[in-house]
Length: 581
Image 1 (cartoon, one colour):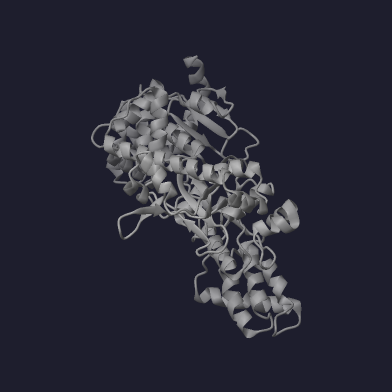
Image 2: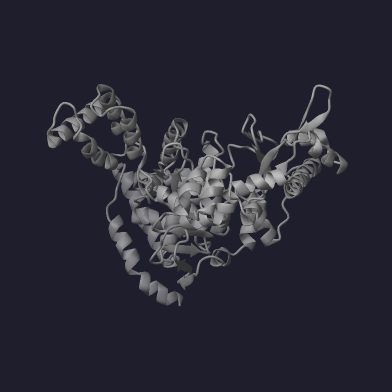
């Protein structure tokens, strides 16, 4: 696998790859442009072909060709590997790849799903009941085509007979939740007398179906269970149809079900998706996080919907996603709002969405009287665990109803003290933190190194001097800072006994320690491109003098003249560049 990755890196030009999406301009040996990962107004995005990495100096996005494909095409590593291998003309080995039997089974499963979809759509086209129901729900031909709406007839085993006639194994179709088996061993259809909603994953692959009963019946909805093709915790309904709009706006609207999502799209809200009534799962959150920065929750207005919205908001906040919660009129959902108030009603509900803390305060105030002791017992923990930036407006909002003081300012002071007292006894669980702060907190800082240490690490990126630098890195006495020594030890541990004296775009991305990999890549990007024989000779002389003094004086540290050396090193930049040219 490592050999395959290395060969792909050798064959794929990162400048050409990134240049397909970013207008790059050559600056020295690097290329710069506007960062595609944030709203960049001045070029802060750099691609360095020598080390095979890209980096944004504003938002911190960085990586190699595999990271680029994973981030821009929203795929996992294996898929990125396959995409780049195809582009580079590299044949991947079969290690870890599915066997022929597994591939054949997967092909049969997908073909069976396609056949089922064709059956459902044919049945819809010939069913007056299904077409009348869709018309009554204002689903026109465009909606029917976009969402591939079908119909499962109430005939018991109609789909089972079609699949069997097409030579599909009904036992395998049972695993796909298309049919089930009775006590006598016969097979019958899972979806009967139901409007059918095909479910596709974010890449557009048909993975499951959902069915809504037409007429009276229980349950109202039937959704596919987990199957070999489908994990409900990983898929959001409508994501494939919304993907481009979500990526462009960096915003998604999260609903509960099929009709809610379709209603939002009909209302012009093309970023709507649904988690289909189940609790929002970690993998669904990660899917949203890959594509957007903001999520507006648009669940039903009943008590269950409000509780689910609060729970989902907390999970999304914890993942660093900015959250708003839309509150619809009592008893309404997006579909009924669209029918009663038109597209403007749905859009207005989303535009007026509340912050999570506004939502929680509002919901509690609607449930309990603001003058009641129970309200004040429950509201203080809610405020204490909120983002500090969001607390003050809510304090001012409820202070006028504080039962122990009619003076609004004194009431606000008292409420602040209650929050402080609560926080002193229990560490606040800060939710809804600023997304940029969350990102920055997880980003390793560029290490503060002495000048000699910078030159040593930077020289590794020049094949003419890498061997000389690697030899010097072996000696702990050549490092005067704790950070530099830790980096050297970590690098020696990563590389083992021998350093791979090849292009840095081959060895650098394979360093497992992310802080070390980022620190080295930052040094590579910051390189003045002036490492030469004169510099290395001066460096060795400087280090030899430092070692001699340490051995003589038994000093643990000696930073003398290091800053002077670094200053002198930078002063020589123009002279050495002229020599090179």
